[in-house]
Length: 273
Image (cartoon, rainbow, N blue to C red; front, side):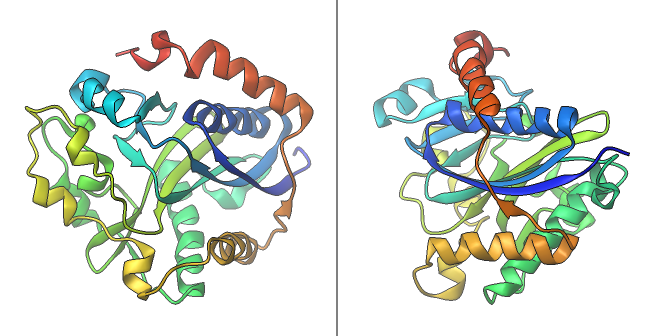
């Protein structure tokens, strides 16, 4: 078994191409160097990220996004469209050979990561829950992959009083995985529904009422640093590991730059489908 290393990285506010490139780099570090990384990050400018299998023109109105200064980026994970703005995004990359506690399959890994996130929410005074399998089944249907992420639930996504609070997506490569997701902090003045195609089959009030954010639950402004520290502490506690604070290595930064240039900022990747 390879020697395991765990670390925590906060990369701050960056553009969407950097954010998605770093997540892929951290996945590669998990695959090639058995490094488990919990990362937190933010977005500027506001961005619609689309799932790997989604068709851009069926998912977002490009002209509306352009006029509002909203970027579009394709993820390597599946799932559906998310508008990233006033949120904290987490990503978690690991190697299951060196870190078997992460689970034997996608479902078990989702459950483990969600359990750590539930512990974080409890730490800040929120008693949330994982979406039920019945709720997930009811939310599936025709054109599922072109629907927005926060319009319905996927397995082990986290909700509060029936509304989605943390939406996640995962990609697995043999014994390694990347899972990332949006932690909604406060009310977003930009609404994804306003940037969907005109013929999109979804009622506006359904999407607006289907999610909730942390400040709405606790009734006060959140201290972002408290949230960051709590997430790190909760993952340490749940997995019984020390996720030590570090930053990207020079090698990882170089790989990130290459992925930005050759993949994430290119139309050939963005408009793949």
